[in-house]
Length: 491
Image (cartoon, rainbow, N blue to C red):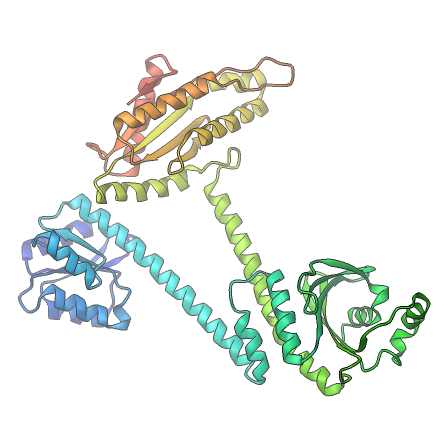
């Protein structure tokens, strides 16, 4: 956030200068102003990423200015951090009620001010990203609806399927909506791959409970013709159409009475060699399909296919993003968080501890003489040991705690809402669990025994101002545990 722009409005020149200097020293682009009207002028010229606003100013009070700012649509998402010497019991309640994001009482503490500024800038960035994603989704919806404006019934279909649905759910929804739009009793989605003898019915309007039913394509000549040619197939009457010559003979031999009279099969591309067919049918008591029905059905199905393809892209993208995010945060060997992911959580927990006057602890765990395991039994056994330790940690920590692999044979555990004594007791429980665990080496071979040394650091504490400071304090404690003979906990 080194390039974030912060507008500071305060009538006290000493406070204005000190806040400006503090923020600039920490890499922010700061615009100081000592009046409400000047503050509005700066806002008009360029909206900052954050506004620090005094409540008492000579030309206007901060409450009125805050209310005016939040009434403007363009500044609705601007985070505002109120600064005031007034008692927080009244000032903070009124400020937050008018739309302020946070409140700090003068005289301010520099570290607390920086932590709250960082928190508001982060939340503002998340909010802006969410707004942008929502705007893009709304624009995509408008485009989809515009494409369907030519037919009223198509608007109905697209309107209902713009929700957060899987492709499977979309198939069931679309056959229902398409059947109603076309006025038919039978509508199915059939999926197949080129050259195969079978296909799968993914959804059927006439049988909503049907799911992934396999059918033989030689029993459905209209499906085979649509798949082979890639063109729509219109069968006005199956009793006379040449496609059904062989099938009609089979029906006669087997004594099958077919209730269907008229068929439209509309092929579409699904994904990477897989194709689908919308199969629309009318029974003998209904009017036969004609060319006009085929054209209208094609328009309906084109709209439906566009929705399916968008849903597949969204599904695939979300799955890919989830996998990438998981890979970026996870240690591949132990499946615990990696150091980068834990660092992000530690930053948030440190801000939370400052805000709510609570504590947090960090445990740094090192397996004693682990190099001997790799040298004696090989790295595969060593990897198994690390995985077992990760599982031990997962079974020992609480739901709110976070375990991570620091690197090599070192692990980290973050304990929110935990003070010195609680962290030391928790670390001792982990040390004992490792000490008592039998690490399997190979079938028939004696198990391994290991111990662990653990360093404990607690925040807030003197000379701990950052995540790196907390890492250093835990590492120093771990070094003492090693120096004192290993297999022990030091704070």
